[in-house]
Image 1 (cartoon, helix red, strand yellow):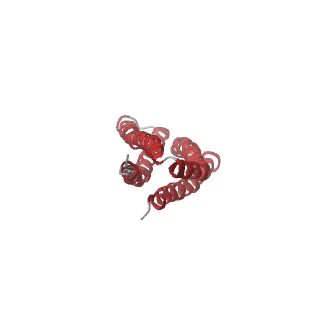
Image 2 (image 1 turned 90 degrees about the vertical axis):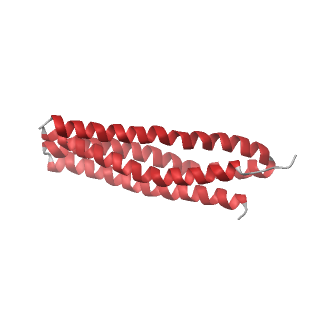
Image 3 (image 1 turned 30 degrees about the vertical axis):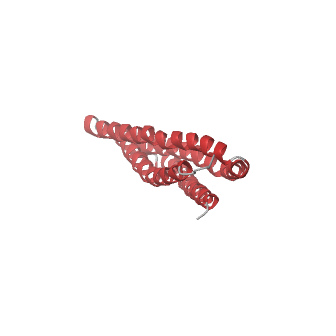
Length: 167
């Protein structure tokens, strides 16, 4: 498989995942509104706040990735075709940062999970239990989504770094 096909495969995966995340995030926003304005119970209000925040974060991240991907692919293809060594240096550095960023995301999901456990363990307030459930959902969704994103990023980064150019 030619490298440009692998580049296309990576970014197709990014765009597909961001489209799915965008739909899920919109669903979270709708669920948050339903919980906050129709159900209106302390537990659902706590859950709704976290779902609202998760939905806003998801829409922002997914929307950014989804709408920038086509332009990014065009720029990278042009750079690859005009200066392969420059492409490998620029894209290799970028992908190293992308792969490294998953450590922070994993830490963030662990913190959300620990905070949820603490809320459930040290409080009997329904609103805080709702927040805890929302944090668990946020952490679980983040781990699931980022598992595939990280796997794809590591594969693509290795492909970029494997580019060898004769002197």
